[in-house]
Length: 290
Image (cartoon, one colour):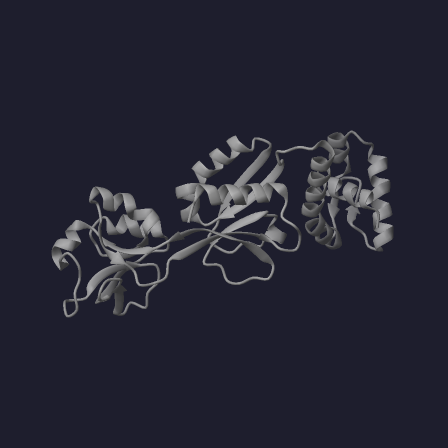
């Protein structure tokens, strides 16, 4: 298989057809078509369905495009860097982050990163599900407490402890801190069986108290807003509530006994990290010291 033919195939696929690829590259449609046909002949499959009105990828074409477009971008970047001796990485960098991290931190991080690396086109999306880097075209993902994955490598960039917090109005009802034997404390949770649960708060000794879920909400920021009304206590990341605690909008009963949450920046292990991925990884480590 000829690498030039593969590169021309990616050019046509990424531009949605031969005509647009020709205008973008300044090369003739006949030349691009000939290269793609050579690639099809070498592979023994059709990569495009052609008609008088449209051109679109076949199933085999879609598979090849998803598998090779990112790798070719990295090769091109590496070749240009070696040829021209550029110190600054360049190109598109797609990053996916969980919603809470994205809303609280990624705006500032993205702006400062763009200032430091103006030749990198940073695209950030937020999603709380686990996206697939290869099939969805991401260079990096940020995940909370990721499961071991042989396909992904990276580093922990932030640790955040859950705090048990409540509004002053609720504290006035149950005391400065709950204690064994009192009535169950109303709590706001992310998921619940609607039954009583024992919460533990770090201390010497560890404090335990019974809880009664009164509200279930899907996101930490929603839970924080609910807790501010005094409806119940909650376990929330310190990053989210430290300012509320500092000004007295919330009272902290202590750290949850659970281990701190870890945020990891990850990229695929199937090829060496590109210069732009390495740059963003190092930038995150500097911006978010453990």
